[in-house]
Amino acid sequence: MKNLKTIAIALLVAFGTTVATAQNKKINVEKSKINWVGKKLTGEHSGTINFKEGTLVFQKNKLKGGSFTVDMNSINTTDLTGDYKKNLDGHLKADDFFGVEKHPTAKLDFKLISDNGDGTYNVTADLTIKGITKPITFVIAVKGNTAVAKLNVDRTKYDIKYKSKNFFENLGDNVINDEFELTVNLQF
Image 1 (cartoon, rainbow, N blue to C red):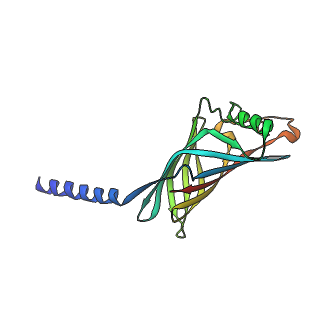
Image 2: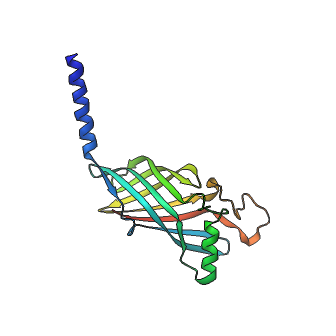
Image 3: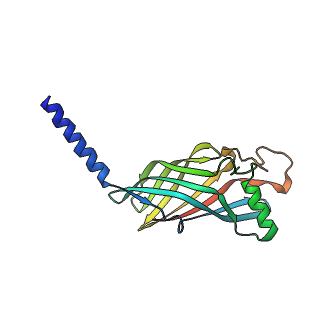
C-alpha cells in the first residue's frame, strides 16, 4: 500500500511538472490577421477574415498545440468597392459558399506537430467549416511573439461546390478554383 501511495505521488508530481511547463499564449485578435485569395480562370479576389479567439500552446519554447475560432461573419473583400464588394461579400456569406447564418464560426485544432528545428513546424490540424471537419497540413513559422502560416484549402471538402469544374459542366470561363489560399499572421 505504501508503494502505491509513493507511485501515485510521483505521478502527480510528474504530471504537475509537465502541466506547469506548458504555456498557453492567447493570440491578439485585433493584431492577428487572415488574408484570403480565391482564384478563377478570369482573375482573383482577395480579402480578410477575423479571428474570434485563438491560443498557441508552447512547452519549453517549442510549439505543442493550437486552437482557433474564426468569425465567418467578418468575411471582407478588399479588392473591390461599392456594389461589387457588397455583392461578393454577401455571396461568400450565403449558403452557396460559407453559409454564415447557420455556421457563424470556423475552427482549426492542431492534432500533430513535428519540429523542423529551425523555428518552423509541420502541423496536421482538423479544420471545421460549415460543420464539416477534415484534416489539413501546413507549415507554421514561429519567431518571438509572432507566427506565420500559409494554408491551401479545398473548399469542395466542406460542401462549397459553387462553380467548381469537378461538380458542374459547361462553366466555360466562369470556373472558380476549388482551392483558396489563406495567409495567417498571428501575434500573441
